[in-house]
Length: 360
Ligand SMILES: [Zn+2]
Image (tube, rainbow, N blue to C red; front, side, top):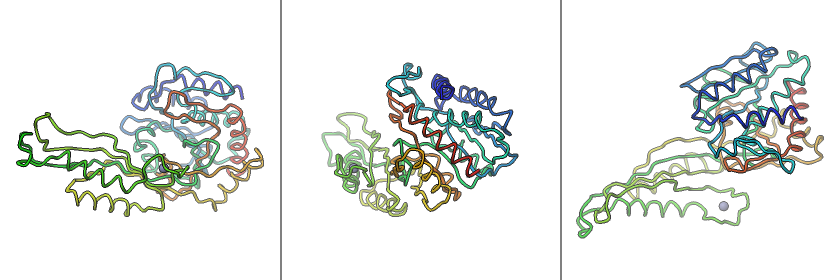
């Protein structure tokens, strides 16, 4: 256990923010060194983003990938100094998701006769900005498996049941500019945009709502810009929106609804990015086994939760590969108090090990 915590602390100290490709590459090489005597390893890159692939067998299709991302979101200098208090490890990446890499490295150390098993480790470095040049790229390179273990989520002590779809769009309203003293002579683009946003908002639930798990669609108006002067009627206004939908609302439904409202207000919609919602198939035997081992090991049932964000899991789902997203006790991802529970991590590790040795 001590070794795993040491590894985690070392990883937290490495400022592997997504933008620092060189740092990510350097740490991937450090990880590769730990694997190279037992695994077939390879470092690949796309648009300067590096990924590490390691397999016990010489194959692109191991039974299982243990997947993680090394990159983290930025934070204060302080949060890159790991702390241990009240049975927790605190620091950037402790929960999202360097703990997983520490677990994988411990597995490699502990499993004797590792070549008798058939699994791989996949570590990418661009998850926080979308995963296009990490997991998506690797799948395009034909890396596959029967199942993926990717402990990336935000709830802790749970397994993901479903994840919302995410749609980022830009909405643009055009008007006719004129002097503010004669508004009848022009068309105010900001007002046009506001009317659109106001109607759009009516179709999502307002917070704080009574649904504790917020199993509903959401809208965030993240950015808004327009106007040049107080005494001028603006001719252009743009809003950037983050729309999330539950799997029960289809992609088509949500997009049609938004486009319909936009059309009514003569606002133009541009898609920035879309990620589909996902649902875990709990009939999958390997997933069933994971839940069973968890219960045996901890005496508790693993909570099945709804995730409000999306992860690299969507790329695997698109290729029909089931994914287990299960995390130990922890929280505070992307905040200045990101933590993982040490005891929780230990029992999590034991579950993972037992499960992996049974299925691979
Ligand atoms: Zn709500």
